[in-house]
Length: 471
Image (cartoon, rainbow, N blue to C red; front, side, top):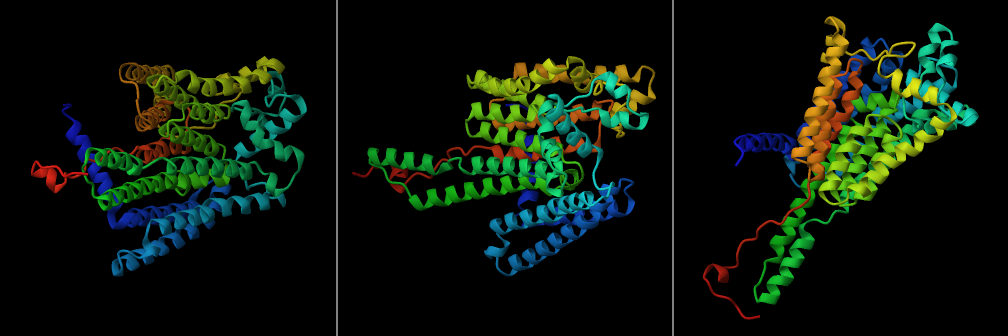
């Protein structure tokens, strides 16, 4: 037995105890209350005008959610089985909170931007929409190095499109019509909602222990034994409730968590990528490797952040003799998206997708959050090389871990992706706090991916006495 296994079990037990306190409402209250404080501080202190606009609306949304959860706690105290304090009600509060803290600010900023306000969108929105226009007019979303150099110095940064070609699809509506609903954030939200809905549906369709219990019942009946069906139903209901509760927590981490709600309302390009990665893991958990590969491949055709998830999923597929099926979508779709841009203008693709993210473009990336990699790159002699070496060493360590102990479950896959991306974000010379939404959501999503296992049933009284009954 591994020495630290009891410690890991204790940590999981403590987290589960916190997560399930007051039927999950205690942690809901903490999430919404802290988020309300964060949004209020953002509205007052942020130097980014789109962020301040988000905080002004989101603070009220989180405050309303906090008050609703307090009411649920009081109701639960009076009646522990009250439906308005149960899991379906918590799902409803989460959906309404996402609408009030992400979708409503998004729509408000989109409408004001369409009316002429120039301070109602982050630069990512403009970059994606310009990429969509170039894709429609020139067949590639990228400007070449000469075209970027010809731009005024203040506009050269916006001339770069540091995304995969598929991201330009979200900018196509704006290329066709200039109105609020063609804002790329609206379509980021649509893509995010669709991917998350498919992920939730996939996990909820996963058979619980009911099928296993039914098989066991038939087997015992054939052998002349009897089983308490009521116990099996109660166990099945408890398993389903735990899974739905874990799934709700994972959805909260991808929607109402302030780092996600703020990102969707003001920029938004990371959210469909994250949602597709979560969908891929959900499909992996339900034994659909081919579809999992397609989902993560779509994410990889949008942004490089999905590529590490794709690689780990391919390793997971190899443990199930399905590596080829996973790789077909995980690698094939990003390559298919890259080929047209490569054929139209190879230099433009290289300048935008490789040189600029690596810090060798005509201008440097504004992503400068003070994580260890950024501090090392800027405070030490040859710091950028040191940070790059640490990043490579981390990648090698993860590769060795995958080779020696490949993930055999979707849970292990999600945990490796989450911790791996967390380490990469911490060590990247140019990074942002907003990128933390990836590891936070992946790690919170992991418990929802656990598959039900057979739970031993208590032996019948006749079995305890050593006697059997006739059929």
